Length: 76
Image (cartoon, rainbow, N blue to C red):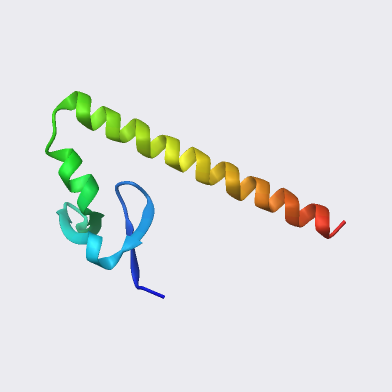
């Protein structure tokens, strides 16, 4: 299994080759190349990236909730 790092910007684990240390006031954090590139775009492009990431996060949460419901049904 490849090593991954958590991107504090998009809140997803990515392969380490897609990650870079990014300086913040709280210290260095890992950030994916996609989020770094998106930060250098215009406001409408940044908003589009944010909406897409929100959609990805909602879908992941929905799948996890469905999986949890499936597990609970099996143990009833």
